[in-house]
Image (cartoon, rainbow, N blue to C red; front, side):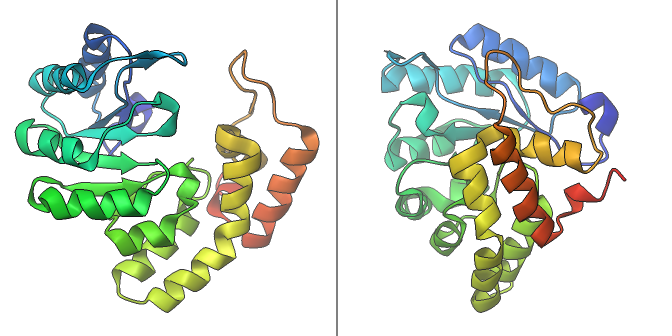
Amino acid sequence: MLEHVAGRVPVIVTTSHYSSAVCIERSVRAQSMGASMLMVMPPYHGATFRVPESLIYEFYAHLSDAVNVPIMIQDAPAAGTVMSAAFLARMARELEQVSYFKIETAGAAAKLRELIALDGDAIEGTWDGEEAITLVADLNAGATGSMTGGGYSDGIRQIIEAHRNGDTDTAFALYQRWLPLINHENRQTGLLAAKALMKEGGVITCDAPRHPLPAMHPVTRAELIDIARRLDPLVLRCGK
């Protein structure tokens, strides 16, 4: 993808790994190929392999020393690693490349608000995630963007831009309009939604998941496409 984009637009690359060495290797390679930012979860493995806060700090410190592009810390439930707002703010202050945060935990708005209050000057960007299921609350808390599944970023953009321009009524109305699709992705299809939408729009030819992730149920897929067609996102038109 980085070769295809060839610097025309910024690309954020996920380079997460439990091993500091592997994460750094991935990150340096991504940077050399043109990545504009790296998104990295704290080290974890399976359901129980976690490391203490001091080693999480060292993990991100070693990574920060190895690259010269911004690092976004992905604070997501999948890692099962609790990182307080105070700890995240400390890393933003002390680690040169750590300046973005994607907050996807329960109560994201409260955590975003606390993080910004603790050290907003050291933070370039506070983003929400989780398919934007709590987008309006997170924007109200100070989120400056959202990183979703990518299937209908044109719809998410409308909400963010209206909010950024101070038109909260329009932002709320747009959020209500797109919420059925956001909710279906968040609760029914998960990360397969973007591929299904891209195939439907002729962007890609195959939407099969990587094994052993199970394929989306045909009925669930049909419901996804039906909801999307009512909204006319760019993804359903741009490859045709």
